[in-house]
Structures are given as C-alpha cells and as structure tokens.
Amino acid sequence: MLDIQRALKQDRLLRALTGLNRKAFDALLPMFSEVYEQTCRIQPRQRAIGGGRKARLRHIQDKQFFILFYFKCYPTFDVAGLLFDMHRSQAHEWMHRLQQVLEATLGQKMVLPERKIDSIETFLERFPTVKRVMIDGTERPIQRPQDPEQQQLNYSGKKNGTLVSI
Image (cartoon, rainbow, N blue to C red; front, side, top):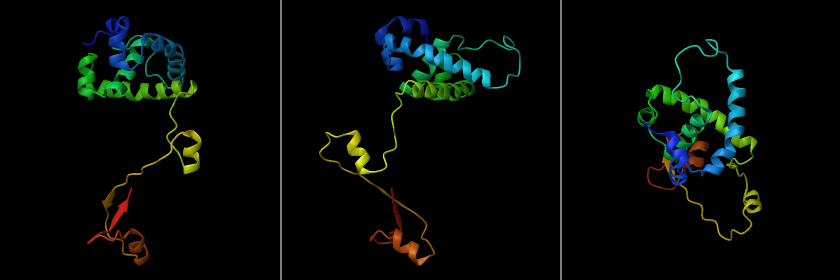
C-alpha cells in the first residue's frame, strides 16, 4: 500500500507522484475541501454520517492525493486499487467522484486550460509570439455514402478512397 503521509513529507516524492510540490498541494487543499463538502451535501445519503464501513481515503488530503496521483500517473484501476488498498471498482468510483471535485476546484481557481479555440484569430490572440503553425491531420475510412453530393464531399482523390479528414 502507498504511504501517503510519507509522500506528503518528501517534496521530491510528492512532485513525482502528483505533479505538485507541498506548497501548491497545501494551497489547493482548502478549496478542494470546500468543493468536496458541497458535493457531499448535494448527493443523497443511504446511511447517516458515520454509518457503513470506513473509507480507505479517510482524510481530505488523501482524497486530493488520490485524484492528483491518478491524473499524473494514470494507473489502471487494478493498480490504483492495489496501491490504495481498495477494490478496483472502488478506485473507479473514487476517481469519478473526485474528478468532478478537482475540476470544480480548478475552475474556481481559474486555472483550467481552455481547450476550445474556434478560429485562427482566437489562436493568435492567445499566442501572439507564434510565427508559424503546422497543422497535422489524418484520414479515416468511412462507409461510402449513398447520396452523390455526400460522396463528392467525402471523396479524397485516393483509389477506393471514401475517407473523412479529422
């Protein structure tokens, strides 16, 4: 089992496992905790607080460590379950639950990357120092459309080529 407390004490180990140093990890923790508490209040409970078995990720810093570790290292759920002493299905459930918390936390801190750039003008606004852009594409075979107009749109010019460019 992974010793989270040991990883939190060693800055180099913490950076290797989560991508954050201790200062950044601790700075993220209050907001992560607040968002986690909000999501717990929203979701209906099956049992009263304290009922049921004790979670493997008991403390909020354990939960934050788990999700940061998952996104840094991308282990399979079997490996994550082994490292955190839980079943793979529990690792899967924790990952999906904590992913939403982490996204909301990073969204509130306004540090999420913006993935959608619609035009070249938007790209040049965000990256004004870029002088040259190289666009790489690939084509995938698709089933040949029956409509002649659609055939013309999808024709690539290659022999037996009904391809769509992505």
